[in-house]
Length: 359
Image 1 (cartoon, rainbow, N blue to C red):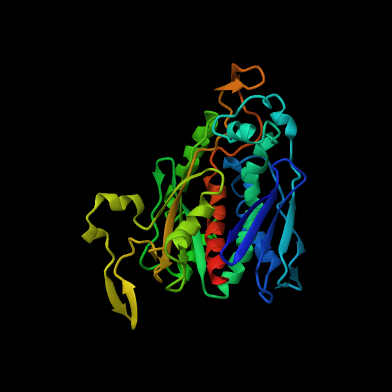
Image 2: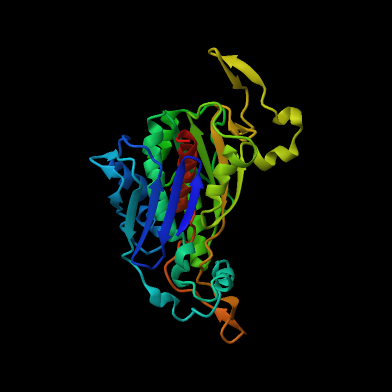
């Protein structure tokens, strides 16, 4: 089981990619919050491969959570919220012939030594992206609670390989804009580039390869003063959740790495009075300064690497024979994980903000 104590919220994930069930336990959520099961299913469906069939894995999972505790009569009870999700479309035979060969790009190699060879390698076992399904369940619960505080989040695909979408307006982002974007099955701002992105993914698929991309996330309605300096900063908290998700390789906030190319006078966000409130003219800081929220939209980007499991023949080693060996990975894998990872990164945002709200 993987667990994290996140300010006022505890999360534990359990299960393996090709095991019978995967699941999650959420602890320290107070009693009395309204929870709509249909909205949970709608939220979780955005992660399913059936949303964009031609560019996703052929593994089809229903991903209908069975809530074991913590919610009764559509209200949180104050006890731990536990849920399981059945794995139905499993096939361990796809990994039989490569059980002794490390898959390039996967955690097989370090985990083999960490667990002395006893780790379950089928589909990546506990380190598989399959475990993001119960994580998204947690994100769905968090989203419904955050709405009672008028806090809303959104994620969109900002790039697939070298095909680029438009960024959020960092200074002025409305709930209406977020709602429109969240209705899309392929969430991008500039719809005219959708087919180019899909072509890029299909091209990689035809080459038995994969591509990655960048996801941009926004959170609005966060009050001023959420977070703490240094180790428990809001920025570091979001980052720790985002970087715990398989396939994430980088994160930047606001102007991020672009800030290294400009002067401090250009990067600083100057203050002004707007409707008797203090705001900044720009939002290069991405809504967080010194680990604490400023009231401006929180904006961050997440780098998603190309899917590690590809059909192209690659060089590896057989750890039983200690000889070099070629490997061809079977199984059903996404040629690009970015479209399905989008809702996972949004879940990270929801869970992090909720952990501070409940603190």
